[in-house]
Length: 229
Image 1 (tube, rainbow, N blue to C red):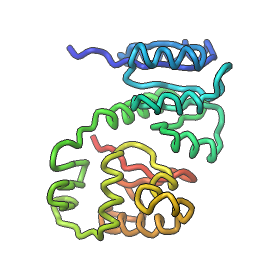
Image 2 (cartoon, helix red, strand yellow):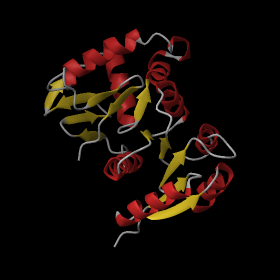
Image 3 (cartoon, rainbow, N blue to C red):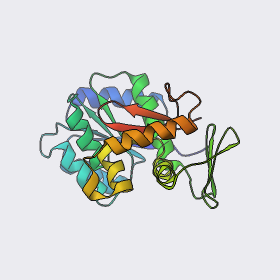
């Protein structure tokens, strides 16, 4: 039997931690609790959890600062859990390295689904020469891209954009993150380039570009490549 995956909850609300513990243990996770940012950073370092659920409104350190510190030394998936339902706040958290953002109140079903996606992203092995995700396959050695086994021609920039999604499959990528990676740090505000290339990527790789199932939009934030079962 495989070892249970562990989840660290950093949240100052006792009732939220109790609810999450009950829900997560019912789904066969081990749970570690922390009531503030300083202890959360300590537990993250000492316990090495498989995933971290992080509240932004902590009593000692702002959750974004905790996230920033974690990302200086750790790639563990982090799901932000917050009452702050603001696009700017979400973008900031994703730019700092959050894997997902769930607003309170939330459903257990939604949170567990987000957990599974974040954990699959963390465990996704792209060391193999061919990356396969649903109908899409990418031969990383020969730079061949296929959809449903049909070879697709991509421009160099389209291919670079696709590879960035492949390396971050399942994770939300903000407009700024993508622009910086593909066009450089001085072009991060010129997101119209990105919209044009996303239309082209979808036209070539989606079965229905108007209803994308591989490259989905996160409204006001960016895009995500969906992980297929």
